[in-house]
Image (cartoon, rainbow, N blue to C red; front, top):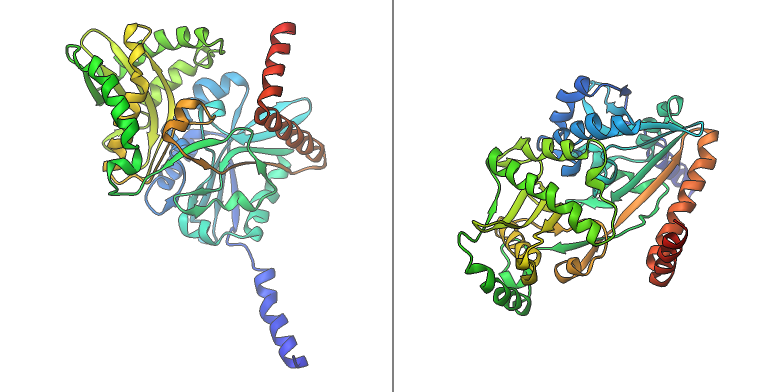
Length: 393
């Protein structure tokens, strides 16, 4: 290579390395009412976001659950030189042990966490953009704890995937669907036959039906049933009832009743007969993916016929026939999820220090998360830890 050519190639490389960020301004807003219009703008087409970050889901969570837990809104909006919004980060700020930690809103009720991005900006966002975004936050936050982020959403990489990251504690089983594919491509014929023979017993019940709740009266009736039955189911499984925590029931009711297009922010699918509700599955949908949030099934003898699995078949076929590309049943590898979901969603956590105090905290959070994942992976250790907890708890 001649000297002139070498000089030329270096000059050509330099702008790429020091490319100025498109982010010209970063606003931090602590009042949800102030950002509602901009936030809803991010929910229009041409944007990249998961349905867990919709305003009508996170606003009631913040008001009814987050505020009670001491989490304050910390909404970050990045704009370009023309003041057009490029990105909105729906975070909440918590203070404790002399540390200011910001994480995604939604707590344990969101399966996936992500910013809301201008899709074109998300496709080209580079480290210079992330530096410009994060630099002003250090004044207010010591560490960002950004957990349960999908690596990709709708075939587009999550721009935060370039941050320091590690695999999330729990995986998320996923069913990939081929739009227009035959029913057997979604659920095998053998599983369909098994479910059909179980359903025969339920089909003899008066008024037996599958439906998506559309009227407020139906939604309220199904939620009344859910909040009666779910605590009994969780007690039976010796699991803590997250739905009994302060504000959670009101938050769930608010999001289930919030209209969105032809459905709701959280859609409720139900299997019922005239005599009783048999099973429900509730989740979020966005035209390409359905993601389950909560479910339960009857305590009556009808539970013997696997109503949850039968309802799952209806839901998968409903979305498959509407051209959806994927479906998940939430975090965790329960056996019933594996019956339907053969793939795994790649999910990661990022613990990003913004101050010197945050560095130690980020290391500690990262180690703790890594340790929890190892324990989860090793079932023997997990069982031992559970027994010890019972013995000493």
